[in-house]
Length: 61
Image 1 (tube, one colour):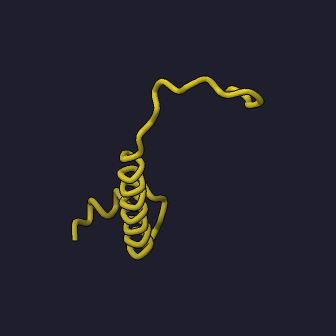
Image 2 (cartoon, one colour; image 1 turned 90 degrees about the horizontal axis):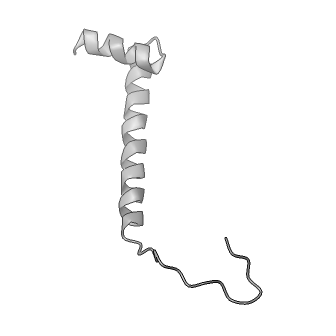
């Protein structure tokens, strides 16, 4: 294990133990992957860049 990298990670993460550093780093990796998958799903949604005016009785945003 790279002790210098571990020490740097502990400082960045604000933890004291190796176990806490590893658990938080793993949690961050999983969270980032979930976010990337959500962004990929959203990238497939078509956006109307020239929307039609709102109809009568609606509020323009």
